Amino acid sequence: MAPVSLNDVARAAGCSASTVSRVLRTPHVVRDEVAQRVLAAVRKLGYTPNNAARALRSRRSRMIGAVLPTLEHAIYARLANALETQLATEGYSLIVTTSGFDAHKELEQTQLMIERGAEGVVLVGDAHERALYEFLSLRNVPYINTYVYTPQATHPCVGFDNNRTARQVTEYLLSLGHTEIAMLTGVRKDNDRVRARIEGVEETLREHGLTIAQERIIEGPYSITAGRNGMRKLLNLSVRPEAVICTSDILAFGCLAECMAAKIEVPRELSITGFDDLDFAAHLNPPLTTMQVPAAEMGAQAGRFLVDMLEGGSPLDRVELEARLVIRGTTGQPAASKPRGT
Image (cartoon, rainbow, N blue to C red):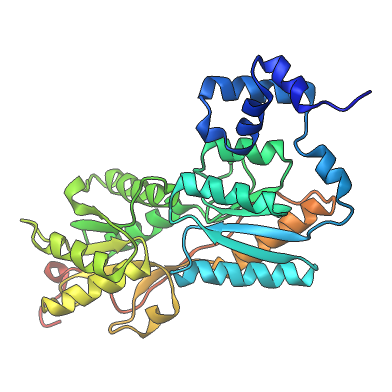
């Protein structure tokens, strides 16, 4: 029986072969209705792109690709280092690219890496464009999402529950007596981790009969400047917060710097928490209370998963790791609840 060709798919889908090719390479440039028709024909006929080219390739590339949001933050570099180390022990190499937190660019970078020989892909988060998952499925390329975990996940993942970690931080601040809580966060668009952390804070406060006004949730890029600017906005509110939850240590650093400039004592007048436990967190003045993220373990586990898949194994496709609250000097009881003389 002759292998299914591109022209066979085109006839079944009622379009040209060039349109089929565009759907398989750059689905975002094709109307959704046409793309879905082509993909249905591909699945029905069992067409595999680049069969001929793959048959000519007698040697595997033994390359794994990773698409990270950025390499400007040490937490992603830590994951990449652990991933590369793990892959090297298995005879694989790593290629890394960045998306700049842009879902469309992430799709383009993933396609480019696979065209250049990547046999598996590591991604961050699980809120990716549908076209990305379709592309990986059509190319039969194993992948794994990192920094996320839910028991009901429909895609392979290794990470932690972002909602639950935010709940843990919020419960800790409530236990100290804080009720006026604010947030400095990354931009929630195209970032499921940020959305989950915001939702975790909101849900926990509601369970305690409290709310957080939207004006107290300041979004911005992950930078020290954004942290300072966001803190300045919070300090100018009619009711100043007692505690600020930051969704990264970088934002918390800016938050703390702005408090120092405004002569606000931390934690006597304001408590601050971070997220990641970057190397500098323990050496700030005061040292930063933060969530310790298992970035290196995520990288190693992701590498093991992809190698197992490529070597014909059946690894667990959902692995939960622990993110741990590290209590240091930037958190304490609110001033109003402290005993006199403290």
